Length: 79
Length: 262
Ligand SMILES: Nc1ncnc2c1ncn2[C@@H]1O[C@H](COP(=O)(O)OP(=O)(O)OP(=O)(O)O)[C@@H](O)[C@H]1O
Ligand SMILES: [Mg+2]
Image (tube, rainbow over all chains, first blue to last red; front, side, top):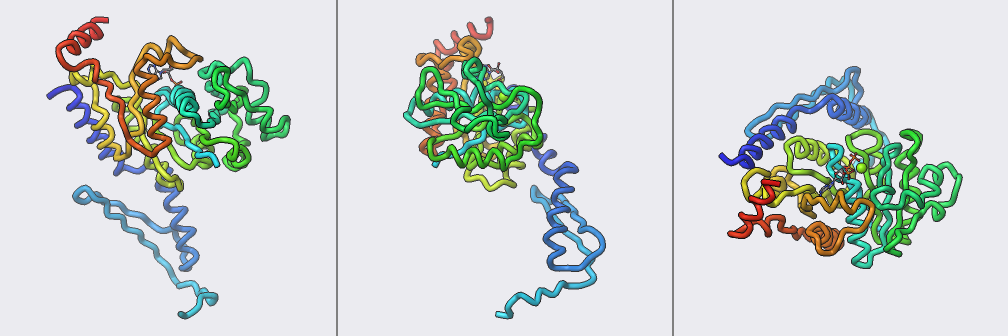
């Protein structure tokens, strides 16, 4: 195989692994953002948990939150 | 109102500052009014690459900290009357300057220009955020090497979390001879891997080094490639300069042989 074809194979492999393995900053930011959105809707004690599993080239993302109550908006109209 | 374009990259030293300067010159050759803004605080080089370092009296931190008015800090290019530079400070990384500070300055200058090109520092930290936060579009500079492609991929992911109108790629330091001999990744393969539009493919040429601080001679491939890049930026097109044109066919293989032996 020519050198540039080998480089493409290597690069694709590298990007595939990078795209899946998120670094801590990404994870922390995601949790922080989810937390700020979810706390408007639910009452909970622990931060949400994000789980990512690679599946046939796609990423299944599962967000788990243990809430003990739904927040009452009151301000929202019923229509 | 000016279109604000940030020139960024994951990896350092891939040619952001060189691209900012020469794309600025190429856009000004098309008659556009261009401002080049250096936000690589403490490690600024755009003034040197433009050959204007001797003319800088005030920089962007002087504007932000009220030591001068915005227009006093603009330096006009020696050759092009429609090309200006707003330099950044060279004495230490200033973390007190926020993206909002820069945004306000750019809003103020925007009616006077067609394009504002922002030279971004390498990496993804506060400097990156400051530069990207005030841009409408991003151009990611990448070289045909594994490490640069890998870092560009991370930058493109990071750029997705900003509300930008478009993210385009500039492949810099392309060697047509090495592509033809099968030793360098092809421009199109990089486009496919990074899944972004290519706005420019710029050759690696000694002229970049030899004409440091000056405009590129019109006869060079770099000049032609930058002209196409500028037209793409202006018209939203993706025409690519063919870096291999010299190296195909019988004479091309001789040229390749000569280049390899140099
Ligand atoms: N197409 C090219 N052909 C030859 N040399 C080039 C080319 N592009 C850039 N260079 C050279 O590469 C070096 C680094 O370029 P430059 O300073 O523009 O990179 P940068 O990405 O701005 O770096 P930094 O991350 O440190 O800000 C310079 O010496 C420049 O002349
Ligand atoms: Mg630079």
